[in-house]
Image (tube, rainbow, N blue to C red):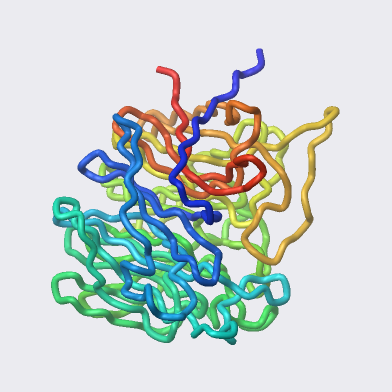
Length: 425
């Protein structure tokens, strides 16, 4: 029996310039869904909103350029937030990233020469939003004109960790001390490097061991490192790595792949371990930082992907992977192959950046950790039959409704906006 598709409902945030958005959404303790819609325009900042899941109402909260105090500067805009929101002492913490690039050798590069009349990108900001006062604070600015490609927060101790883009410096911001510490580059010359030499794709997800306060990240070669904020020191794990045969084979010096990086990862306090997903292969794994072990749990790609045996079409894998509000169920938005006349539709063989190699369906997967229960809830479509595309974010409200940010065709104009996927009870 063929599975009925899930139907996603669309919302209009009123931001006509909204472009592909990565992470940038979370549900806060007040029940609100907070999200940022990105811009890839030179002079248009990303926009932040709050969605009320009960009333299904959207409130505009701010323009990233204005929040960062750069509204009247002729510099490349604060076009993105590339990170989740983290709640600490009734404030949401997040950061900004550049959204306007120069395409060089098929890769998105940080502009090195500003367009006429503009200055270069000034650098990303670490920001906070007070949930009660409904006000923003600009806490720190990333040096050397780099953005923030990933960030995590230790919400017990008030430490923020992140990686800059494109060269890949690790940083730590201590909220209580109001101090930013910039450490060394973590992997070659990061995504500013030369392909085949010192280019290295950077980790897109960090995880904090809530027991120790240490922050962990991967390199494309599969090594696992941790940052000790009490000593401001980075060290490599000696016993654990992600160079697993199941994950595939990669050249770490070439763009267009995340290699052996984990794609997304979160801390699971019930077992004092982290659960992560490898992007291309779709394998769910368990990482124990204290025992220094990595254990394959299951393959959580869509059922059609499992049957096909092929990787999915997004070259980096999918970021829409999170622990649900019940504290035990993983929600994962991933790809599924499309078949025409019984033949799988194939995309490009390789691509030099994080992008879709070809068209695919979007599937919602749930995985209950205590019972090891996997379920593919089916492909997701809009009411008009269109597919949600370029999905790399996820949030789940207290009633189990799933949200993401996806491309929508509005009268011939493609914009990214909020969509809701309701699971049948």
